[in-house]
Image (tube, rainbow, N blue to C red; front, side, top):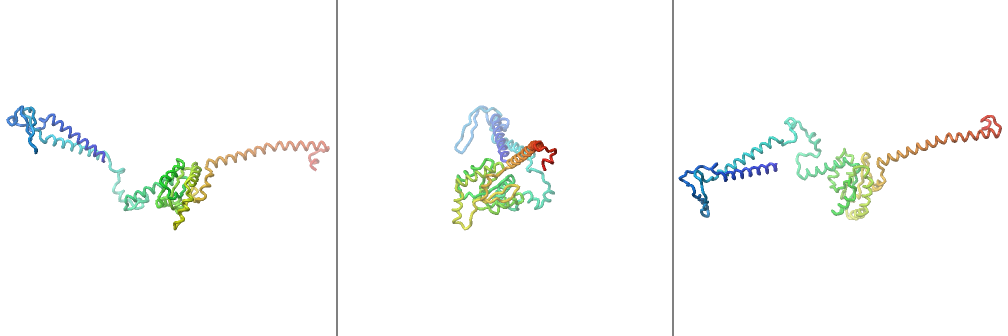
Length: 330
């Protein structure tokens, strides 16, 4: 709307300037005629003012006179008409709503319909509440697209340290420091409450790590161990808990999608040896290959052993003068 108004004002100014120029070049087209006896050819026009009279000398043809306010009036009329026409055309060509809604559709709405569209809807909402709801919805969307989520405590890290901590994780991993209230609400609401075990232990300067897939889980855990060692987060958390009435958790833990069991914070470093689906498939393939090789070797050895045994039986029959295999065995 602001751009359209600026365009209309620019066009109006251009139209007024054009009309003024036209009136200057051809004043006889707009001016009222003056009798020859009132203004003779070759005379000058005298204009009065607050600070004295001024002479506008120059030849004036018979039948011409001072244009007065006619150019300004006509320019203003033309500009107004042009701006009104453009505004009406814009209103006719563009709809102010994304979709036409009938009165019946509005009257048939219920509170359940509104809450289904937006679960955070409330009848009265401030700008701050709307912003917090938008942040909460963003966290929920990130949870729904993550394979693994873990939460640890930055322990009053400075802005520079927080930036270094975020940069330590892989590029595909999102690491953010979030407010505990919004984080708890998002964890409770996301995917029917499957992330709720994390929400029950949130506290301190919560830093959330969103891992998109299992391929980056190992690198994420390695980066986490490096961050803990480099910034001495364990020692800083212990020092902070010494003068607090409540103990802040150092690492809340993590949850892997499809397992939905809380992994305690002290066991997070063990995930450095986590096997991805690809690793498991390769291990199964190697096991199947080894089994088939052993079966093939065993089948191959059976005929050779049978031939060796038969040869020895024949030799014993010849040495003892036996006529049958039963005599040899007996």
